[in-house]
Length: 89
Ligand code: SF4
Image (cartoon, rainbow, N blue to C red; front, side, top):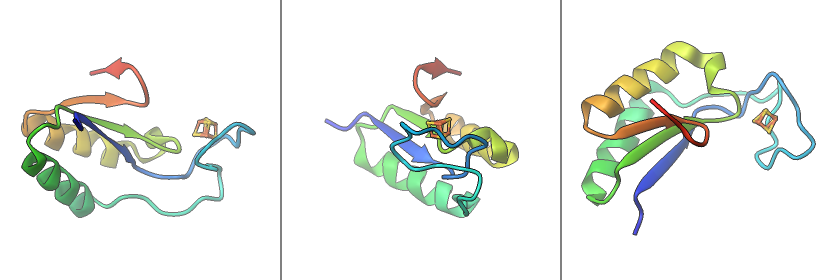
């Protein structure tokens, strides 16, 4: 049963680690948009089993206002939220 969704807000990262499995780095382009986040959350609600939404990347803090707004929307919809792995807000 699917209970959580991890949103890769961006592939951009200030680092470029050899072990990075999403190949993030400073040159990676693009982010989720707020409307895309809303659509994902609307679909997540429909599934009925999703309890938590995690925002990660790349480095989601590079897009702090977007990350914060996504967290606010998700929390407002009743989801638990987190950043990366294991950081509960
Ligand atoms: S997302 Fe994590 S693993 Fe990937 S480059 Fe950035 S810090 Fe390294």
